[in-house]
Amino acid sequence: TGRPTQRLSLLLLLLWPGPLATPGMEDAAFPHLGESSQPPPRACPPRCSCPRADTVDCNGLDLQVFPDNITRAAQHLSLQNNQLQELPYNELSRLSRLRTLNLHNNLISSEGLPDEAFESLTQLQHIYVAHNRNNLISKVPRGALSRQTQLRELYLQHNQLTDNGLDATTFSKLHSLEYLDLSHNQLATVPAGLPRTLAVLHLGRNRIRRVEAARLRGVRRLRYLLLQHNELGSSGLPAGALRPLRGLHTLHLYGNGLDRVPLALPRRLHALVLPHNHVAALGARDLTSTPGLAELNLAYNRLASARVHRRAFRRLRSLRSLDLAGNQLTRLPTGLPTGLRALRLQRNQLRVLEPEPLASLDQLRELSLAHNRLRVGDIGPGTWHELQALQVRDRLVSHAVPTPLPPAKFFPTPSPCPH
Image (cartoon, rainbow, N blue to C red; front, side, top):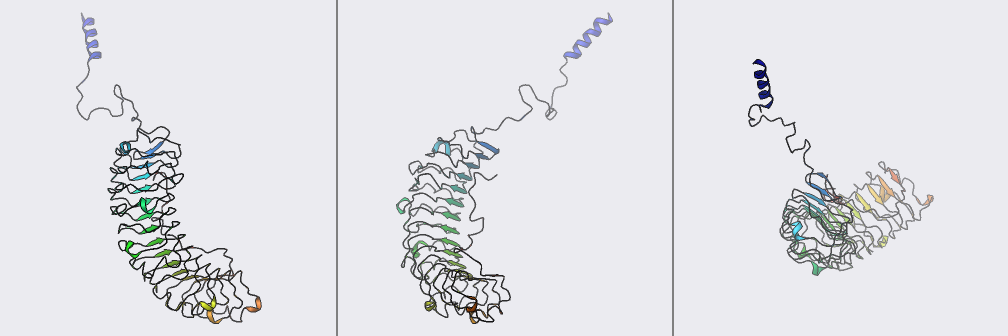
């Protein structure tokens, strides 16, 4: 009788389910029925990479259709270097958390950019819509950017934007915008309605013929204005046109056909970059409005010694770099600022070098005189005696060197997505 009882007890023991599980007592490391020990894979569009939960990188896949299974959690989306022709509103509207949208180098046209394209993307901080192949974007639809109040950077360069493709409301709602790149387009005027937060405005390589002060009154915080390779000519920058820009640091006017230094520039201007224009003279008062100027680049103009006034530089006590390369100077300018550290005079027609113009330049570190008409006997005795700080002499510089661009935070390199 003992054995059947023992067998029954053993059978009951084997079948006993054990104590009821209580919350917090499960073995988290042990896979439960129907579950895997690995977390489920994160959804990612085919062929794309998703290195983080908030990042989707579909760069260079020759996509012709906007991916339809991008996670709603995406904050950084790269679709650059593809064949996209349009932005579907129904797909974009799902991605309300996007902060970076990179559409650089696609086939998007104005027709493929619907009015409500970015309507739901209110968290956007960076938009890259530059270098769309065949230069297809000629306008930004009215209201397309009206809700992007957090947008800090907008890249629209290398398209076919015209004055008719923008209006006074295109950028006016972008209350956080700091950097706007509209270079390499077909604009004839400075856009209206620029946001007051703007720090950098890039308008190089357009067709701008005249700059009006009225268009700049709202952007008094602007620090960098880039207008190189436009069509300003002799009357394109009238006196006082830039006066509203009281905090302007750098002005690029490279290659515009200007025949004189613009008058009444902002007093706090730090760098004036004017190479490859038609400036033929410097008067006594041409530079008096910018006493804080530290860099002046007048390389490859038409300056002749007889038309450079002896007091042209007298107010520029902060000047550290003066580039006069590629002009028609036959002698050194007089009255140079004593704090000058770099003087570039290569590719002129200097025939004589005398010590007097250099006597007070005891901080000069670089003097470039290559490709002139100087001979050893043309250099007066004692010419180098006062230049105790000189480190570079007769350095060959084959072309004008423009001022450095703004800090990296203002000119970020467009990348697929921040990783």
